[in-house]
Length: 67
Image (cartoon, rainbow, N blue to C red; front, side):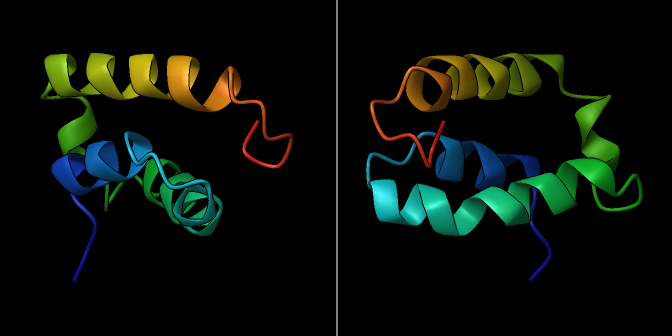
């Protein structure tokens, strides 16, 4: 199954640190591949939620590996 914007947002909002560590590379691959991430340009609200989730949950995480 190819990741979608909804899937990626759900992964970003995960509370489980172990799962965040596992999904990090998957998110990078999704964002880097223009063919997989065609919905990024079309759903600004979802993209805003994802960036907000990354900023608040991941960047501010006390776990250095997640940061």
